[in-house]
Image (cartoon, rainbow over all chains, first blue to last red; front, side):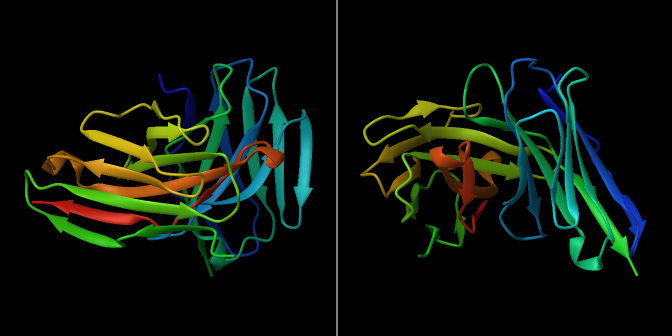
Length: 111
Length: 113
């Protein structure tokens, strides 16, 4: 079992809806959690990171962390077609600062 | 501030040929990484360098070598390319002030025939 799991999708939502992307991880000792966005043919770019239980909001993006249940979510409010991309969850584990990446969830926002 | 740069952007090799992928960063980061990305496999770590003068194996190091030339530059070498090394290669560096947030280069698309 991979240490960081994501549903590969695609997740399809209409424009203006809330997109919910989920990620589970296996190492209870993990301290920091990252969400990267990757457009087709481009490199990943960081959009959110979180290290405390609860929610962290940045514009239309909200990261939610639940360490007891070992999952981290990314909510995108008022989804736009420009949000269509693959979203990668990354979690350092095993006491290392180097993250393990999930395989990514493909998001499609249709007009 | 160019961030992380990679050369070349695209390369075609024949089986058995060798090549070096170049990476440089101008953000004064200590740590640098090489990943490969294949469809359905996500990003897999090949090698990393925690600081100038040190390198360590990642998840998929076989068939590759690396050199941390100085703090800015980290190169990846394929000594004898194989079709299984057809992939997109990303170099990254990380920021210790930002919980080791990784910054990625634009990638090198490698096709081995």
